[in-house]
Image (cartoon, rainbow, N blue to C red; front, side):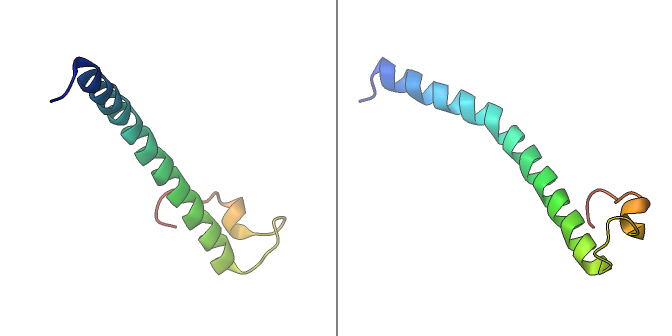
Length: 64
């Protein structure tokens, strides 16, 4: 049988998870966008920050 302390701890973890999951989802989304941007730079092939047209035009967010 669960004690009051066990139920309290479970509620604390649930509250924490409910708060953190959206933060983690946002982090994953931002990291995926960064990954796509890096992949776009590799696909560009110029490998020159000073003359890269992709960087000069501003990289789109999202799907590369």
